[in-house]
Amino acid sequence: MTTRRTLIAMFILLPVVAALARPAAALTPAEFDSIIQSIAAIPYNPRPIATDTGDVTGISEFDTREAFLSAFTRVEIPAPANGRTFKATNPSNHDDITIVGYVRTQPHGTPPAGWPWVILTHGGAGQGSIALNAMFLHLANVLYANGWNVLAVDKRDGLLSRCSYQTTDADSDGDYDVNGALSVPNRVGDTMRARFCETLPANFREPGYTANSLPSSRSAFEAGDLLAAAKYVRDTYGAPKIALLGGSHGGLAAIRAAAIMGSTGVDFRGDLLDAIVAISPVADHNTFQYDFSSRTFECDRASAAKYYSEIINGTGLDNFSNDPVHVLDEFYAMLNGVSQLDAVTIPTLVIWTLADETDVARSAFAYAAKTAKMKLAYTMMMSRLGHFDEIWRSDPYWMEKAMLTYFKSALASVTGAMGTDPGFASGGPRTTNPYLLNVNLRKYDPAVFLSQDSISSYLVGAPNGACRAEIGLP
Image 1 (spheres, helix red, strand yellow):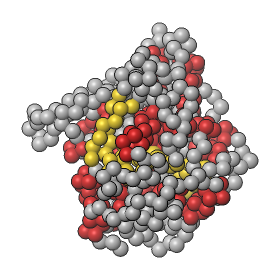
Image 2 (cartoon, one colour):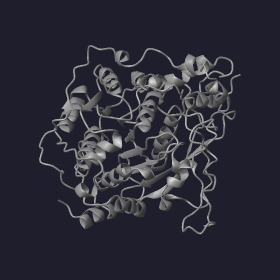
Image 3 (cartoon, helix red, strand yellow):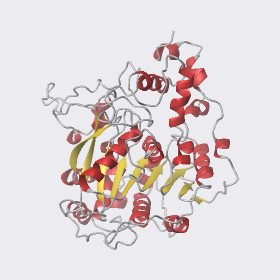
Image 4 (cartoon, helix red, strand yellow):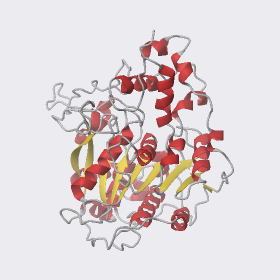
């Protein structure tokens, strides 16, 4: 196994990589199927997720973070408030917002034309960040070591983008104090305004940074943030090939980004992204209420629909106050990752486990039934182990080998300089992946696995009145 010292050096030192011979050509369905088969052959050796991933990788999560911060550069990227058009396109729009990321390019100054990129983004809604997830930091380091240019970015609801900090230690606790941590709530209408900004590691905080973000839309308009990130690397570095990876809410946002690019009324060209990976992506926000034995309606989605329809111009939503049920249905249509795949034409890999405790198995089946009918999409289902970051923690070798294989095969198959080496050995004895499920769902309609009942009318007419009050209805 690679030693810890060698692995850290691998992350920090600049590998010698040749320029790409030529841009990757569009994949045929047969080539895409071959890629999926090669990923399925990678052994998966799950372990209890409480164990330290350093046992497998040879590098602690602390050292992963330090290696990342020593080599990646913080950047601020403009994104359209409505997720569709910049203010320069339509002066009546809300001012553009700012998203924050960390970038690292291969050692050639401005990368040559044809040099590929991977953009990584986090999950969660209002409390997530790439800075909090060791998976993304470790994968960013490994991707760079294998020849990729990398941008790890927080969407508008990520802590890097929405949190501001003072430059002084007012309470003498040895840390910067949160300033403006309550200025952008986790969810619209949340009067508690949770202090998730305090969870951001101190070495990721930028003293003096003034946050310019908006509340979470649960991935509806965060998709525009990811397209803005792709536009940034294309405009800044001339990158013609860009892959996008997101987990959970970030996976839904990645699917929606691929679905809306190039569509009417959107500032982002239709060939901006070349491939996506969505790990444990949300399937359908509208039917979450039917999955839980709770009488408490999750009104934050209704609050977000109201906010984005009435405060932010150009979202495509009608006026909430005129017909809240209709606008909620419009909003929820953006939060159905399965139906959004109808508009996705680029190579798409969805990864799900049936043991995911954050969502339910029906989501995996719905995605699998949808992608079974698509030529350049596939849902890889495993019987274990958990949500997207838990799959990685269970076996980081499998996740990183799978991602390196997919990205190289889809975007840089002819380039010997692009590698597929995670930098550490597999953590177990298996030579195959016995946990992959080969479920034939081709004959099913994906909607069979999702509730056909909309929650919108129930939210608006919530009997205890609490939800109506939260979304400003009498």
